[in-house]
Image 1: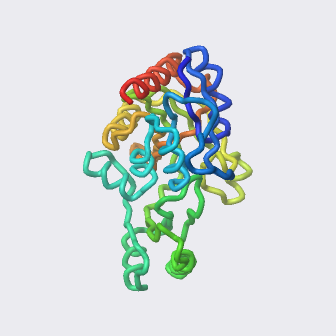
Image 2: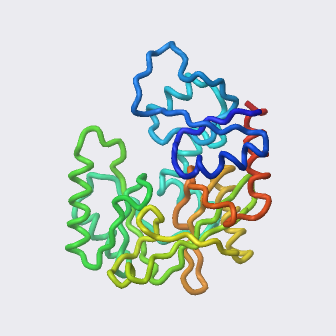
Amino acid sequence: MLRLAVATDAETLDRIRDPLADHGIEAEHVPTTERAQPLGEPFTETAFDVGFVYPSRLMEGGVADAALDIPWVNGRDAILRSRNKAGALTRLQRADVPVPESVYLSNPVDDATLRAAFEAFDPPVVIKPNSTTRGVGIAKAHDLDSFLGICEYLSLVHDYRAADDRSFLVQEYLPDARDYRAMVVDGECVGAVERRLPDEERRAGRWKHNVHRGATAEGVELPAEHRRLAVATADALDIDWLGVDLLVSGDRAVVNETNARPTVDAATKYEPGFYDQLAALIRRTAEQG
């Protein structure tokens, strides 16, 4: 039995544990935070062969990586390539993958620079921290004063000396866009979900489609051109296990974000060979060391 270290004890571990066990892979949680670890002592009683996804907190992840001394399906570099939204979008543009119109800003910037960024778009605009997840900190501004006020709050956060990311994005807003998460495993799109807000939430003015913020995820069959877009994204970022977020508005489809630590949904939302391919990727990672 191959032993797989999983750094997050959440829905994904619950969902992958039994299907991977059927493929001879034992998935076990390895806590990397909220613990006291004497350096030099064993990090865990279990000897692992491979890790799933590098821990989300990079400092703690560095300790776990050094102690476990195992390869990861998605290692530190893959996590950083995906988490850096502006960097990922730049790579995708260079690979001719369509993305939203965006302006990247790094604090401190003056009001003239902010105004120019805002006026590059037809409002409203989306303001998005460059490295947060789950929709944290994303806002929409309809006018210049509101936009500048949001940017001022970001500057206050960025003034904190421990803040290691002081950048953010201003992006076009795509009204009424449909929001899809496509899953790519080892260069193949193996399924997708459409994320939707309940009608009452939309009527209340909500517009973010993150599942962690109340949206539902329903399995869908993506058109071939959208599947190719997801695969091209994973190829451009050189990440074998990737969630690709697509926004589709009219006849236009763009890659909005990517996630190198995607939540795994119920198996019914993926194609029949999903776990065969995931298990094969895990085994190959272990063998290549």
